[in-house]
Image 1 (cartoon, helix red, strand yellow):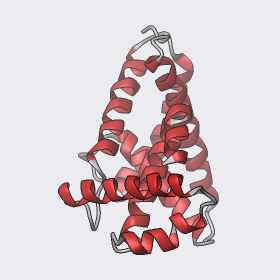
Image 2 (cartoon, one colour):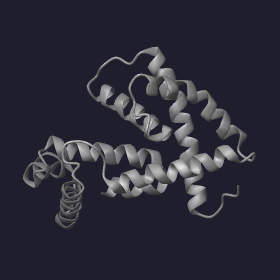
Image 3 (tube, one colour):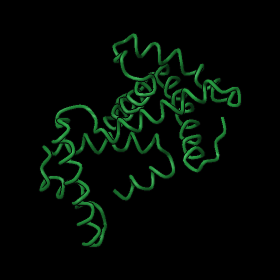
Length: 180
């Protein structure tokens, strides 16, 4: 909860990947609050009041996951909304001649996006979701201490650059500082 608040303000891309990880941690603990308390919350050096707030946050997420039927797979609507907002911003940036560096970053990442979609990514989902799924997949591989190929590292770099720029523009847009 505390990490998510900070990430949401500072880097929306990292926030989204973090929230996907939280969804998976909830699933890995069987959506059981006792297991979450023991395996996740118990490891945080927090005061009891803060632990209670964190417990409530996890309980709320579990309730949302149950209501939205994403207990086994998928993402919460609050996280899907971020993809939608970022996709809208992404398209505005691409259409505007004021953001040539963003367009260049997109076209550098595009071959990797096309390749990922050709390998089985859902073609109905926005391209940005494919990008996030790629980075999340790489994160999972790293957590498992699996080797990452050079080609995957190149894709990661291009996609990370694109999403970092988009995250910065997202912050500017939220502040009302972005003009198309």
